[in-house]
Image (cartoon, rainbow, N blue to C red):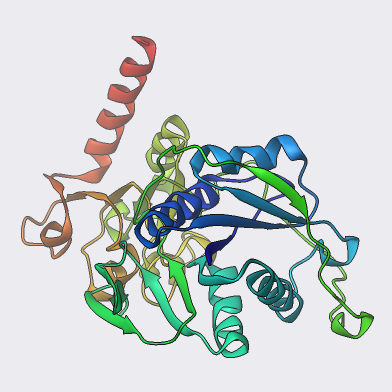
Length: 324
């Protein structure tokens, strides 16, 4: 028996998300008294794979096949299912991102396994197996009991954190059976965003709403984001007005994010917006209206004009950086 983790890589490199998954799985393995197996699909060199051992991977299965360099849900599901069978894994952990959301349900059906999506904590019990997960678009939590022998979990990003705990890190090449008939999807072109922090990967997000009064006033938000190594975001009315691209829209109908720090400038805090950012570890709100709903969700609030507060924050960050 083991705990298996699908560790996604980006151009042959792992990000914090993968290390968080391994850290989480390591703790589950401790509770169950078993080991962890990390599965890597794609071309990743051994030095990069060894990083997974720093967070608790006892074994690392690497699948290197030019046919799987691009995500195909059915193919990846087959690879993971075969790895589960090979390692006799009873718990399978994936990220609660677009990839995990696409693969986990398929994997659940294929393995006849119970599925808990968006889990936020370690199991409170293993007999029966009970985990805490988000419900109602993150506005509430539920404790879910998984009754099947095999369990598929998708972990909400930034809900557990990363912690080092050395695993054995034995690297093993794995060659699953993949008939040519599996490969029915052809990728014609891949376009990637470069030169900026991706919103869904960002640990810090600086966001603006209608209180910014117009697209011409976005300079302080972009400058602050640049200083903090953050991504920029916006509320739905802002993207609807064309002030900012729809790719920056966060909320129930936009991107669901969970950064360590979310700075909301000039955002009133409609429930649809909060549904997309409520999992942020720390929320800082800036608004002229002291009764704005955003302050109910915020950890820190500044009642003031974002047009004056943001430049002051920019100067404060510059001073801190200058002081080293």
